[in-house]
Length: 412
Image (cartoon, rainbow, N blue to C red):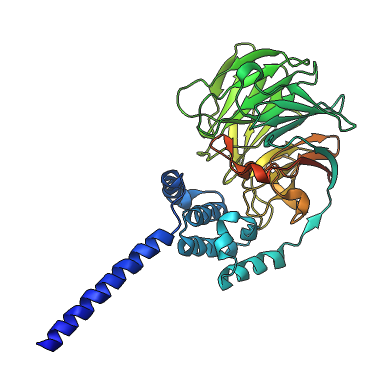
């Protein structure tokens, strides 16, 4: 009888200790991120798309990132290993979501494998520094006649001008016109006016804006349908039409400047978070970058198709995309470690024949987003700090720093 009581006492003690340990583990466990529900939904969406995506590596990397963001490092590492095995250039060492894995043996081996295949490239140099902190810029454009750069601010809802000599002034002041966060920008060369997209990450208030050369707002055009919209990047085709990406609605629009009306482009596949967009010099070929590759539309007949890759390297995740001498310049910042690459195209513009890394694993691609081509040069923002901007506000003001603008000589 005494033995039974002793056993019972031990069981009660162990149960109590186990409960205390579980409570302690729960108290010490990291809390789920605020966007956990949206992240889980995205995982489900991409897993459903996985059998048919044009770039399997891009989908695997995004799923791995999302699992790591949720704190599920085991699942994140599992998908990451599948991605790196494809050897497409994804570099997990530069993705903060995987930081908890930095001492993991398998994770270290993955990084070593990537870096053994893709060596650092450093060709750019710094040209300007914008001293104002807290801009969190996303879009950059150039007036090719004057050399003036225009840079939009997500945080301050403004546009600054940067002269050839590096002088910085406001083109649109913070709070002026009550406009939203600024994403894509383009300069109308004929009259020096500026077109801009607004892009609140909550999907509200997206607009296409037009300012004259002095900064006066001459037009603002909301999306054609209700719901969440994020007008991202844009290109001008002559004086009649504009094409722009809507990253949250997963659409690309044509804007008729005379009728002031949007129409959606019909593409050969569903696109996921369309972002960078480029137009060939002759105005015939429209290139649209999304999370899984690049779709090209022949604007003469509206036919679209997937751009064929040039070897085992990803064409996905181009935040900025630019046409240059029958090639595409891509600012790819969703590969783990960002890079700028040049995709040489076949004469018909439908296939990549070679990939030239222009900047990779250098201090000048800390977190680039977009750039602007002037002649044979690409100006780009080196350290936008967009990762320090969530829910339309700066996360940690102590981490803000001046914006560095670098330049690359492009290959012919």
